[in-house]
Image (cartoon, rainbow, N blue to C red):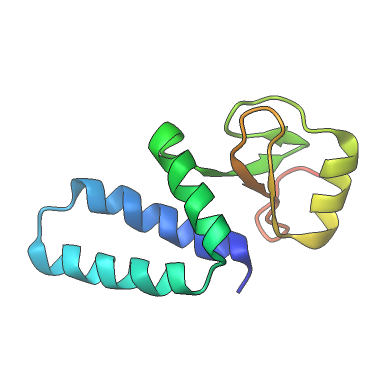
Length: 109
């Protein structure tokens, strides 16, 4: 599993945790969050939570060479590399984690 997939699951669980009222579901989410964090490097988890406090969507997709967080164009060299590696990078403008999902992409860089 790619790092962006783990971060995306982590982000979705954290967002759901904010609105969840069911105690058993909260416990399940917290358990899954612990497992996801254990699979990621500490520096990525730390940066993720810092971004999550600021933006809520700390990880966004990059479509057509544009960050879907700040909607600014990525440098063409970064877009080309992301198109090939399908892993996370960082937007130079807003600082969010960005990824290019080749399976779900609607546009080509």
